[in-house]
Length: 164
Ligand code: RB5
Image (cartoon, rainbow, N blue to C red):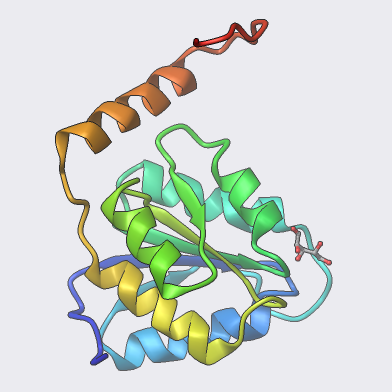
């Protein structure tokens, strides 16, 4: 696949485990013409992924950035943290298919990657698919996203009920 068209402002963040991959992807993105803002971490010292993930998530939820990429060892902690910020739909993707579906069906706005799970070349392929794939806009997907928003807005925890 060729380089994606650079029409987006991208917020980047990682912990120490994701630091080398973040630096490498930032180089690829800038080389491809994207405008990146790096929320850290800025060195390989041990640090806490929620700090950087939350910074990226706020940057996207506030509309300052079109999309964000958060990276930790597995991508799991970063995605959990990002999804605590209202308006964020963070998807942990490990191949091109999951990236395509996260954009097309879920209109996900933050991508989480696991630097200890996937290699850098695969990560770049995932990022390219992520940046090139629009939300399908289909009614059924909009309806489901509406239900996710409703969950986000209901701040209470209640007992589960069966649906059928
Ligand atoms: C750090 O050792 C590791 O726990 C973190 O990068 C991440 O994988 C958490 O989900």
